[in-house]
Image 1 (cartoon, helix red, strand yellow):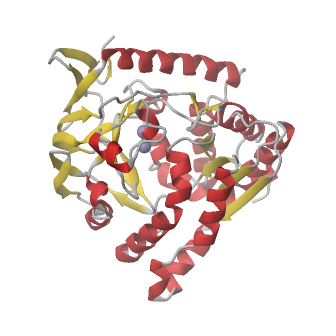
Image 2 (cartoon, rainbow, N blue to C red):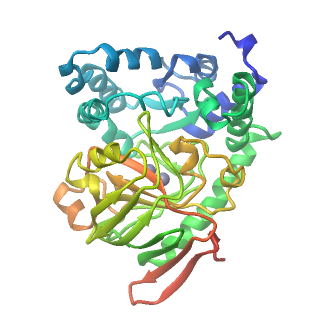
Length: 415
Ligand code: ZN
Ligand code: ZN
């Protein structure tokens, strides 16, 4: 589809490109940029390249994916295809990050792209990909470089969010929601982001001052105690990567988050929204944790995909992130279900199974795997966020000496 046929005002793509390069990445003169997205996002990728070169980028390298090509593999690929991955590509991306390239992903994926494909093949292929991508992903999860993710209103995705509308109307409606959540629909997006980052930093600093030992979540079927890792740090909004560049890794972002203790999580967590995971939809997840590990799991849809996910490795059935998002966040107030983690995780409190963020621990720069584990940091090939918060969520902080501090009441910050 050419730019002229897009059912929304393309000046917002220019603003989104500016926010991605400025606020999102804070791309520095001389930095290379690895830019990933589907072929459908080219109208935005091209504007991002312009913004990047205007900011002084050295080389912008686009790496495109395509839904039809991905589906072709599942329909016609040989059985041994599903244990293979493009190692050479991921190795190259790892080398780029090693040499201080920035990374920007534009997400537009159809959440249902692979929902009619064999769950076993989907699981094998994503595991093979995760193994090949791990060294490069570590540069992202350890925040070695400035990176960011933004979204583009893909047509198939839009039709899932707005099933009652025509394809054009749905894409226009999703575009409007993305532009609003990304704060590019106001007069001064950069000033709006600066204020939002100050607000998130205030919450983050308050939580860090409490030095909590655990959080207790209650509401919407969840009754869960999440111990926090020894020397955990809360993070949120703009943050400084290890290369010294302050960036916003998610556009939009509404969360403050930290690293839970992988052996100190107990109770029941029930998903408050469906989870869209690599082309499949998983609904009504309910899991029971004992000493940090999931001992019972169910879902009313996509249960097999979920089971495969938590069996990926030992750390896949333990938590690597806990995040707080008020029910009054703008994305939550839109009332929409996006079937996209970047959006849905910023509408509700969530937990993530799998890899922790080492950056959410004090003095974790050169921490050994053994010390990370001793402090409660989880390791896994996966990192999958899913939502447990809603309008009734109550969160109580438990301090080192057993005091109880109200954190959330009625789905929002208690103070
Ligand atoms: Zn999160
Ligand atoms: Zn996460």
